[in-house]
Amino acid sequence: MTTIAVLGAQGMLGHDVLTVLGNYQPTAFSRRELDITDRAAVAEALRGFDVVVNCAAYTRVDDAENSPDLARAVNAEGPRHIARALAQTKGKLIHMSTDYVFDGSATSPYDEDSATNPVSVYGASKQKGEIAVLEENEENSAIVRTSWLYGEHGSSFPRTILTAGLTRETLDVVGDQQGQPTWTVDVAYQIKELIDAGIPGGVFHATNSGKTTWFDFAQTLFRLAGWDESRIHRTTSARFIRPASRPAFSVLGHSSWETHKLASPRQWEEALNEAWESFLHAIANPGESS
Image (cartoon, rainbow, N blue to C red; front, side, top):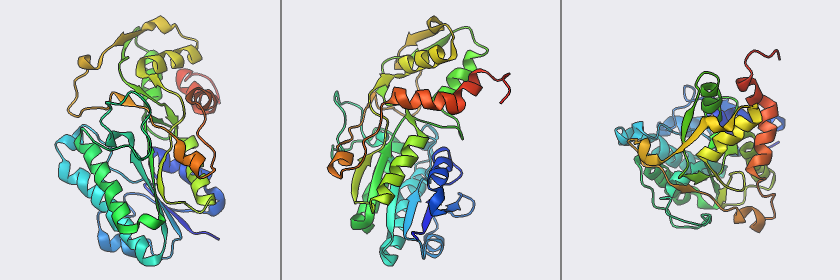
């Protein structure tokens, strides 16, 4: 049986990866159980695994602007340690990355081989992580980029919007950033697709298909909750100045799945409807009994 380790297993994506890969009986490593910045610890912990799914990352995008060394250690050197360890044991790696490796200036979906050009410390650290993985173990590694994630086991845009909608009369939401709301369960299933297929090397984009804006996403959530959508007011990114720049266009293409004859991601609306029934409705209706 294929032996699998999931790093960052306590994170929002890691939780769902463990569940979806349940039949493989994966071994979970939290940040406390394995510090991926420790080269020797990584080599020792990953010995004997056929596949490693690396969901571990430093994801505090704004804090990274003032902590570039920490971001680089976790997001660039950590993946290098993992890839190097697996190169020694002939193991395979699925390394999670992000749309933040792009600058957001495109007007059509980014292909898997589009040039990267990060505009934040976080994005630059993730770009360096991709490069490190390919330098150390390109033949047996898959880079999987995702974006606009939401899931049951962590903070996310839907959770924030629905929680705020319970107590606030109106909400201002930016309408000048485009992306693909992506359910972590769907990403987990695409990771399973790669494992079942023997993990073909290369770059894959694991986002739900289609595109929307944060404003339209928020209105969709209000509509699902049965709330008045006019309570969501459109605004611009200029109203919400943050330390780190965000890509204004985070729409990713999915051609690698077709190239490898694997299932392409479904539409974001379809995934959201299922996620609503799964857990989001309970956020909007906290008084309901389960």
